Length: 408
Image 1: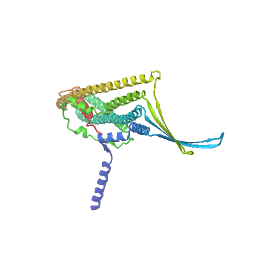
Image 2: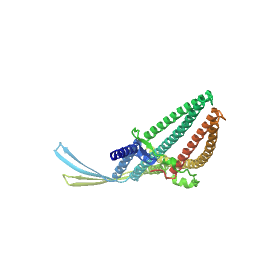
Image 3: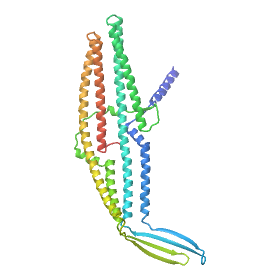
Image 4: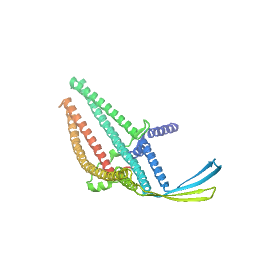
């Protein structure tokens, strides 16, 4: 007897272990983290940023003098070998090299903001797909409950029909409805499977039957949106990557305008040559003064200044668009919450009406058609309630994104 008990305990432990590891549960945060880590666009943009960093570093080296040596052989009239070392340094060029370096440094910052923009867009897309999976799971759940209810009712009607207390047409109506509910259940399961695949594709996760997501979000209490000052949210949202990138581009256009202005300044260079054979040192200075080049320099200066003004207008335009988006997001959030609360009231009323219909059908007071209408109304109320719920949750995530509270 003791051996049998020990054997049973071992089997239970093994079974529990297998069940516990059958499916790996992923939270929203983990999906976003995994998706960002394995996203090819983000990795490609990071490489592009490294290239801009390299160009910025190289531009700093342009401030150093260039050094080269040369060796030549003179064959006639007297054979000789000349070896020299030459050093050239540009002392002043109208600050063009300085602003070129600043422009390349800004390009590196813009590339960093582009990485952040892709990260944010991916986070929002993953959040939306994650919530759609949760919605599909709940739709499968209520569809399964609806099928179980109609299946139970079919069993009762079959007993009533066999005992002569119900008509054959009533039984057929229930059977037809049961078949319809079964098809509906399969369709929702297919939607759930498709949403799972979409989410796994977004995070670049290889196919796995063990991929499951946490329903923690769906279990959290739904609280009303707090009306915050739109100006307060806007001030926080100005740090979003696309706004920062537009500001940096405006700064870059300013550097380019100053580079263009430097093209009409004199250029002063110094050259030092050292003859290794004769030990002679030559030092020379060269000044280049632009006089006339067909108006290209002046035109470039004017156009660069206009580009800078256009970039400043683009910053203002994007800020205006952002303000409108935030105002609409807040208003939509309030509307979605009210819609969700109204759908819960409708759901409670539909649930009560369905319970009465089921009782009346059991005693033969109403027809199966009336019962099916009540049941379909209840299912529709469930569906609208769930859709309103997840629409509101997603809107809350959007507002968190604007306030900088989104997952990093």
